[in-house]
Image 1 (cartoon, helix red, strand yellow):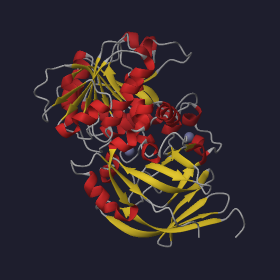
Image 2 (cartoon, rainbow, N blue to C red):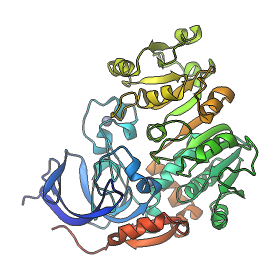
Image 3 (cartoon, protein in one colour):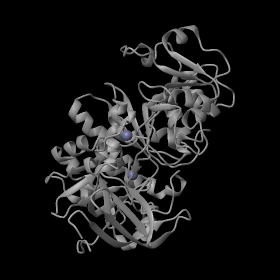
Image 4 (cartoon, rainbow, N blue to C red):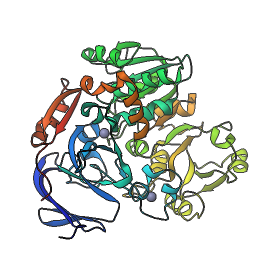
Length: 479
Ligand SMILES: [Zn+2]
Ligand SMILES: [Zn+2]
């Protein structure tokens, strides 16, 4: 072999669409130009340049993993995306999971990577979720610019939580509580406790005073929620029936349960912030997981919405108008409004040469139109609206509307969502905040050897488990 050639071979457990694990033999072959991945001797993935080989040391089990069979990506694969990995010199890394052009450092004419939306690059693969083998296997191929070295101050037990903590921090920063607001985290467990910790850390950092409440079904978690920074802990039933309507300004839904969303809608005055990617319909919408994946927001159509009144960028916002009724004159004056069938509209925005090949905003009048704005083409994981764009609802909403849509159109509730976070910001906070540095020892309740992955999943589904982490043996190297 020349120096540029590398082969590793290992056994791993594939996750299948039947929700079972099955042993497979993997071989990664790198030739200096790219990598080929073989499963049981068959070529299953060919990757171009921009990946490096790392050894997984630990990998957390998250709700997305437990719901993986509901997600729109091919199976089987080795899953696991909350990874602490090491290189051949023993240096520790956490890995941002989106293998975009920017993360790989490959030149491409990609409007998304250029616009700073690399985590939404349409050509990305995702570690442990979409194509790329994940951290429940021994070896990983990680995008070269997505690997962040872990500061010495952050212990392994906390470093393995950087991926979900970064996502939690992104939620806290997106919500950006105002002074005096009441913020609730609904269903804080493995992700939600990190969301509580992130809000509390942001409050310490920014000095903005707001009230942070954990809404729990399981009283066993009350003490942890307080340790993580909640001012108040309220035990609730499935419907939070002890709490009045609009008891909070913002409710962050971290339950991973579709039935919780109508509860969050009822409790929230300003915003429901959605973190769940459970892959199932919720609140009358089919594509809510995809809404979170694309970090879209639902808001009412109003003339004073920031998208029309914000700083002029020169270009007018591009609007996909889906209702039967005609758009109002003020909107036609303020924006580039296009109407028609959603698939044709998608093609029209895709043909635009400047900016992103999507609408900035879609306007909808029904649940079906909201779903069509999120995924206009059956079988294609492409939205009509750009990542972090908005779907605005007209006040005269169709009667089939869900409680969520009725609340957005009727009383101006906003549904916000966020997915991946900023790893550098998360590592910085974790390294410099003494309380956060110890997150791992407080949150991780169960540890398993990688060979016991099925047991780790079974345990992660139980109430006794907050966070399960899978560990790889430290011996063994490249073949
Ligand atoms: Zn996760
Ligand atoms: Zn890209």
